[in-house]
Length: 321
Image (tube, rainbow, N blue to C red; front, top):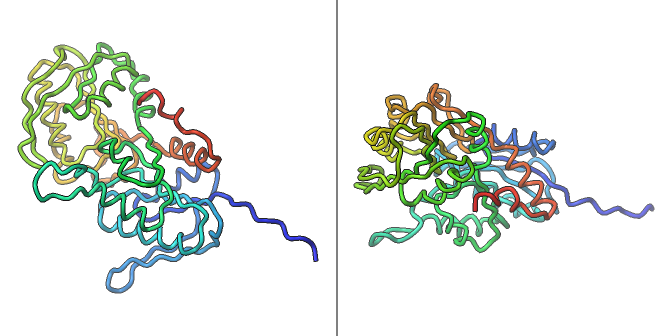
């Protein structure tokens, strides 16, 4: 009998049903096929999962953003992680282009949960060995995990797009105090001035813009943010900028949730263009002419390859942090 040769602990990329198009593009950038997996429903609606190929001893990358429908996609993620763990995968990386339940990241009122921490706990308990994500709603969420977290930024993709537009007299405006760090990175990367909208929140999704720190009169403006949900914050920021005499106004975000009547608000706004990424799938009825979608698959593909090869990925975002 000839001696046996140990099988290589190769990489395999799988996806759930949350954003299959992004997963296909990531696999394409890696020049690997997506792994075969069955995700269906039992008659009463429970999620059924079966991995249709051997993953024992493999380095698994599971792509499943927890975007709307959030609860379904979260439960699907957890069931998939459990399936890979029980199938004896060597390492499981949960690739979460969008990390849901992140907005409650601290106890800022009595008797409220910290859902960002809860999510970290259950993802780890379900079987994830590490997490790869992009533009968390708050960077401290990385510390909520007891496993390694690689945090990517959409800044290189979005900034490159705006550099090609060669906008004149550009001012980058943070829509709130919490977004100053992101706005500063865009201002530096685009060689632009910086301004801040000082706002006061009147409800979970309603805001009232109060003041402006900086100068925007007669200038081209870019308003970057990590997400657009109901577009309430963005609409108030744009109204404030118009009041203060801004010229053309652009907006960008990593995660285009576009819930409620966000699309109608964006249609009616004076925004010239809204640049987003494809971390979250945008249905055809929400793809209005003002919205430009940029791909992040090459960035995720490069990060996955570096994680698999045990190489640093810090050079992918050194200019941001």
